Image (cartoon, rainbow, N blue to C red):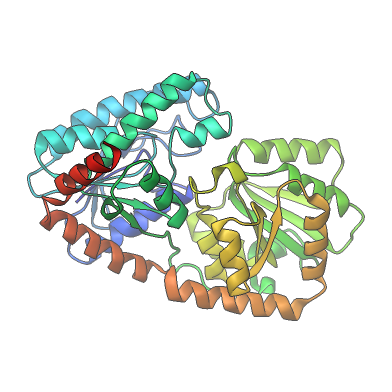
Amino acid sequence: MLFVNRYYAPDLSATSQLLTDLAEALARAGIEVAVLCSRQLYEDPRALLPAQELIHGVTVRRVAGARFGRDRLLGRALDYLTFYLAATAALLELARRHDVLVLKTDPPLLSLVGWFVAGRRRIACVNWLQDVFPEVAARIGGTALPRVLERALAALRDRSLRHARVNVVLGERMRDYLVARGLAAAAVRIGENWADESAVTPRAPADSVLRRRLSLADRFVVAYSGNLGRAHDAATLLAAIEALREDPATTFLMTGGGVKMRWLEQRARESELTQVRFEPYQPRAALADTLAAGDVHLVTLLPQLEGLIVPSKFYGILAAGRPVVFIGDPDAELAQLIRARGIGVAVGCGDGAELARVLCALRDDPEERAHMGTRARTLFEERYTLKVACVRWRQLLIEAAASPERSAAAERTASRQTG
């Protein structure tokens, strides 16, 4: 089994931790697992991790490349390009006839590398899509590429996905989007993300070390944990924080990083919003404690990205047994699930007053918060544990390795559909 992603543990990004969870679980199950990645850390491009090591039964091979980091578009593009080239060369050397090659979506369009290597080495290729590029970048203004080039990249991406044995997506709308672009339905499989049930369990807020350290024991804590980036709505959150400026009972605890986290911190400082606290990314070992610090947790996704991204922090919140307050499209797939299972509330982007009202209502109803948290943990145990995910992934990988005709059949079907 060969996994490819730009980052691998030790790391703090949520999607890289998913890879760590899965790779180590498969290794414990007796499957030979290798990971190909860069020598960087998510928040430290200057890091130079070992070129090769064995981590909990997983062989990790790291390739060198540019290390400009994520802040500037040109530097990020150069980082991507050098990783593509180095990863392609390393995979051609490492891949063996019976391997299954699993490629994530960091950097974007990694499926093109998989298409080339799988064809040359005649091995099964599985794409694990955490997002859909270049559409994501285009819809949030993260690329200056001409529209004709964006369309060409999307078409090339689609072709690479058609040549894969199977493509794993995070939800129904992401699946529907790719099928609408011409992929055969049989070649697109939903594989929802998860959290590690042994690492994150429900804890009382009073038991959180972070909460005690910040002297928040008597506050209603609205928490956000992880990356707050271009795909997220920070403006609505800022409006709610400003609306609750004079509320002595409520504190916003923002833990993590990202371009919009830095923007929010600057605006909070300029406006003297003292009821919002900012903390850096916390170590993986502190995740359960960090999640326990919040009475409710925020999740956000810009409406134009619906069907292209599913926020990964959602699963950890469920594992922690906390209500979810979603800021995004009220008709989003995640919003519908939250309402259907009674695990939180959804608020539309741009409605800071409604977000403030919802938070006040949750603050004043601890009994309903407790019920929401219990229902959240129940849903998590039903669908989103690491154990459930590993069973699903192990079966998928066995099928991929045993069915070399699947990708050719999918390609023929897709060709007829689009012809």
